[in-house]
Amino acid sequence: MSALRRYWLIFAQATTVGLAGLFVVSTLKPQWLPVSPKASSSAAAVSGAAAVVATRASGQISYAAAARAATPAVVSVTASKSPRAGQRSEGWQALTPEDRLPTRTGLGSGVIVSEQGYLLTNNHVVEGASDIRVQLADGRQAQADLVGTDPETDLAVLRIALPNLPVLRLGRSAQLEVGDIVLAIGNPFNVGQTVTSGIVSALGRNQLGINTFENFIQTDAAINPGNSGGALVDIQGQLVGINTAIYSRRGGGSVGIGFAIPVDTANQVMQSLVRDGQVTRGWIGIQPRELSPELIQALQLRLPADTLGVLVGGVLRGAPAARSGIQPGDVVLRIGGQAVHNPAELLQTVSGLKPSSTVVVDLLRGADALTVTLQVAQRPRQARLDTKE
Image 1: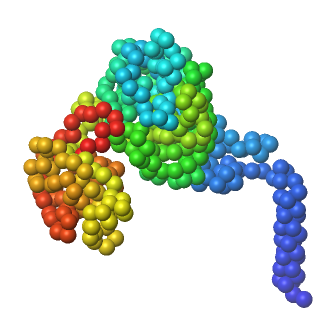
Image 2: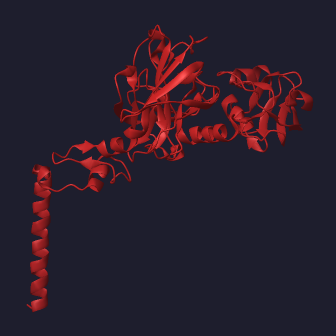
């Protein structure tokens, strides 16, 4: 036997024995093995979390790094205001427990997102407020100025004047996936800053009757009254949503169904409010209705293959749609070349159009296909839940 072959056999035998020993130890005594943060994140089925998912000596996974990164920028918001004129739909509960406070002081949360002192919170936290104060996690307090509100997304922007403000980095809600781990941070029931964890349960939730424009992140992270305007963060400690509502029995707490406004939407609204003092959206003045199979049969519609569309339930007199000849009973197939399949999609498409621009609308009127061109108007400032387009 040559020397080279003898060395190769020794190496192969040593490798086999080593792998066998590693298998036995990892199976019977896994705690003896060192575990890297990257391995911990893999065990948690979370990609790219090595920097923030720490593994303690006991092998327990912790999100403490993400919490430490996010909590300093989440504040408590106290808004003194008159009683609210209305309530949300039955079953949906805003996260502000002012109904239980005789002084009509709204308690909620907010998120510092700019070194210039800009904060994101919910409109229903500060709606009608005459005095707004925020308290930081480090104990500092400040009077807040209301920069602007957008009731149709239930967002508001505040500003405070304090030095050395902690700022929460903005993530990308468009990159979230169902099953991603998230943390909810806020001030539930005014007990103090609280962090809870869960996963993204669903994305793109709409037609819930909460806001006019709905594209919610659903999560099972425990959020309760007082969490309104607080942060939903990923395990890298980045802001991905603004907590806004829960599904709960009247007066109850979390049942594992919470909703957050995506940070991509919140950032767009904030930029508009800071720049213009309002959010500018397109508007054509129709009342869209869901085109159900029953309606298709009743109206004897002949839709193109793989096309659904949205039924025009009503047209506002003098609106762009009325001036262009759109009538109740028409079916909108495309707006600006983009197909629309339900009222929520039509609402989002039209709101994204620039006021004073022109757009081509493809219609179906009975068996006839029509194309009209109209000039888009600016959407009037409206209360939540008004879905006229």
